[in-house]
Image (cartoon, rainbow over all chains, first blue to last red; front, side):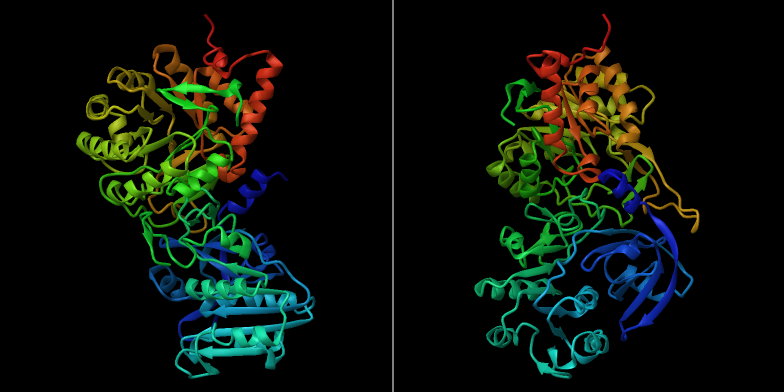
Length: 274
Length: 306
C-alpha cells in the first residue's frame, strides 16, 4: 500500500463501541475500544477519539493488541467529562494510530513519567520487559491518588526499580519527578531514557540528559486538530508534533529549543505557555 | 531548486518554480513555512488572517473522504495585529515570496488586514473570498459580484503590493466572478478553494464535522478545479494559480496546460509528504526536457485549441 492509501485508511473515521471502562482513580478512566487498525499502535503513538456531537481529541495509547486499543483519559474539560459520563457499549469514533513511536531499546533504560504521561510509558515498559537488561521507572504526580498504574509498573519492572515522587509527600519522595534523577545518573549508566509528561518536566529532563550526554526520547503534547500534519495547530519549530512526533529524539528537540518548554500555539494560532 | 527551466513570474512575484504552499495548510509560523520552502515550494501562502482573532471550530474539523479531505477549521487565526510579528520573522528567514492570506467581514476589514500585512513585509496578499464554512465572509463575499468588486477595489486602492484573489467553485458561474475580480484590479487569481461538502456517520446518525458543512479538497476535486482554470483562462487574461487536488507532476502539468501560470498544493502535503514540492519540480523538469521546452512558461494554456 502506498503512503496515501495507507494514510487514507488510518484517517478514515471508524465508529465503534466502548467495550470496557476502568476507573484508575477519581479523575482518570481507561477506555477500551475494538478497532483493528488502532490495535496495531506502537508505544508512543496516539489516536484521535471522537466523542460524537462533542469534540475529537488526541490520546496516547495505553495498550494495543488483540483487536483492541486502550486510552487513559483525565476529566479536565468538556470533551473528557462527556467521555467520562459514557457507559460500556456507547459509540465513539477513532482515527489512527498516528505519529512516531519510541525506539524499543536494549540495555539499561530509564522511563520518567509525569501524571497521565505515564500511560504511553507503561505501554512501552511492557514491550521493553522482554528486551531490556534492566528497566527503571520514575513516576511523579501532585499527590498519591494521581500516581497512575503503580501496581502495573511494579509487575512490569521489579518493585525496587520503581521510584515514586509526589509534590505533597503523600507517597514516595516529596519532590518533583526530576529531583532524584541526578543521583540515578551518578549511580547507573543508562543506554536510553524515555520521558512523557508536563512539558516543563520534559524540558528539565532534556536539559539534564543533554548535560550528561545521555540519549533521550521524549513525547510532546500540543493542541491537535487534524492529527495528520495538515492544519499546523501542533507545530513546534519546523516540526509537526502529530506527524514528525509526538516522540522526538534529543537531537530533534535541540533544534526547537526556543519553543520546547517555552511556548505552543493556542486555538487561535497565537503563542501561549505550554 | 536552482533551475531556470522552472522560473516563473506571476503578479510581479519571482518564483524559482511554479509550486506554492496553499493557504490554510500549516501556515501559522515562519519556521514551518520555511520547512515547506526547504522542501521545494516556490512560494508560501499563510493561513487566512483577519482584523480580530478567531478560535476556529471545535473538532472534528477534518474528516477523511474517499479521495480527499473535508475540512471546516473555521479560520482560526491570532488577528493581524499579533500576526505582524510572525510576518516579520517569516520574512527574515524565507528565501521565497511570502503571500499573506487575509479575510474580513467588509471591504474595510479586508483592506485593513491587507495593508498591515503588506506593511509588515508580505510580498503579496491573497484575498480569501472563498472560504466555504464561515458566515458573512469568504464565499459569501466572493460569490456576490458587487461585494467582490468592492473588496478588490478597496484593497487595491489602499496598497501597492500584488493582490491575488482566491475564488470559490461554489458558484453558478466562476468565470463571471473571475472577470469581476480581474476588472477590479486583481493581479492574479487562485483557482479554486474547496468544494462545499459534508460527511455523516451512520452509527450515530450525526454529521461528523462540528460545523456540519466543510470544504472538500484533494484528488476528488482536481477535475473540477482543472475545468475552472480552463474556463477562466479562456475569457480572462489575469494570471492564474491553479489549486485543487494537485498531488504529482502530471497534475501540475495539466493545470499549466489548462492555463495556470503556477500551482498551489495543500492536501498532498498531508496525504503524501512535504517533499511533494520537490517531487513535482523534479517530474516537471524531466517532462520539460523530454518534450524540448526551454521554460515552464511555454506550457501555460497550451491545451486551448486555437
